[in-house]
Length: 337
Image (cartoon, rainbow, N blue to C red; front, side, top):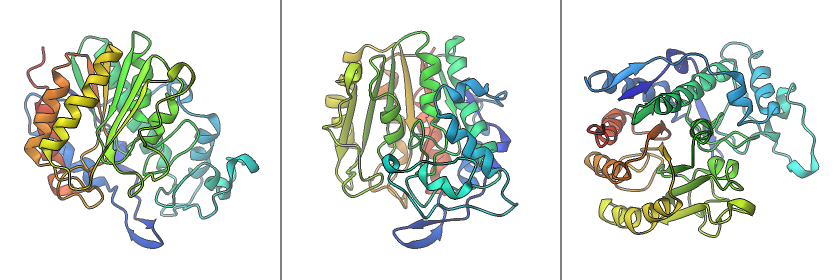
């Protein structure tokens, strides 16, 4: 199995975030990717690959040019300087200038996702990892993995937040949908609001997310079962909410009886998995109770679909065990031919 990662994804170092009025140490550290990379390197069946630079068109096809301009504006910040938006205007009543860093709040939806002069560098290489993971599947690899850091599933076409700048899974899905129908499934503890928004009106990408209750957990304002798509996409969006403390038996039941059945009915040609591991029992942000061994069992459920599959890294913040959880999940696809 190929695993894509570029060292420049480690150049971005968010030091803190504002969470519910408190300044806390930022959970999305470089140690996450370093731990995963170290564990992948120890597995002989995983082939580590450094992606080439992503074509700018692939990012532009997925994200508004103003968002790209804003990240380029942030490149002018001084070293060690980080910009945290504190004013979030009502978008329908405001106009923004992405060349003015003080307008960043127009494009952002939280106070935990800073900009600095390395944001573009790390985020574009993260997107490159997912882009070339998708390209490898189109070239014949049955399964590929993108160690996408920063993560991406909260980023929409024209907004960023939730530690996400470019939607890596959506970029991979758009590569694959040139050759067929795509199911994008999100197993992160938090709802993949960005992926949902990008494909909400699409009839050739089915988006399904299984997550904690958004009435209690980020992103709060979306991720409910009533959100089923619109226009041509009506019926092609699924949200499954599980209660706090969910363990594998209950998770597996929902996965089989609701989640995977819906994916099968869509009859996709490809599968993209937004793989977050903040469902782990010790995760400081997530509130499920899955064990390391459960991730291999979960992967086996997806592997049974026998679809060409791209796996994009999302959350997972108990760093010590993160690499083990990732390897456990990937091992569920190990025997795919």
